[in-house]
Length: 237
Image (cartoon, rainbow, N blue to C red; front, side, top):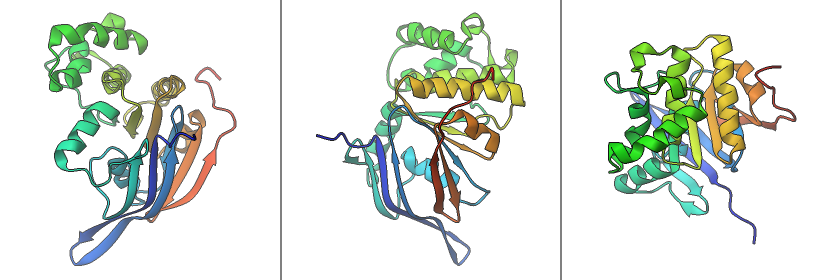
């Protein structure tokens, strides 16, 4: 029997109102995401990228259409079940890192575990393991103010992985980084996908797509193109 896609959107529509004017942010989106893919979603401001990311992460629900995770409908979950889905199935990486300034690097990584009811001491070994994975083992006790932008983003990636989510969503993860540091973050996200996660990144940076397996372009709430890239670029290339 064929396994269902990790995440599948069918004819997804989302509208907002700007004053009296309805604006269709997503206009009949059909998209299927598989495990192990690093997908980049690009398009101009207002194209629907952020709205799409919200749908993928159950931060919002569609006005119509279907969103299925491994065959199960999630588009119409109530708030409690949406929250549970986000905690256990999705890791988020943000442009502005969203680290807590009073916590150390490893404590920031452990935060999702704490919110899920796991004690700090019990969460520490996994947090340290993930910091080692992202190359920051030596910075585990440092607070965000003692870290560079690239290091903070690495902490954010580690935090996104602490719950072992099958889906990782990255919202402009290189937007505040220089090109070299941004390239290292893109390579790190590519490695996350290679380990079996589905990684979806929203970005304005067309150069970032060279690190992806797949590029989806959006315009006026519709998919303009969906292309697979034959060979991913290495950060050392």
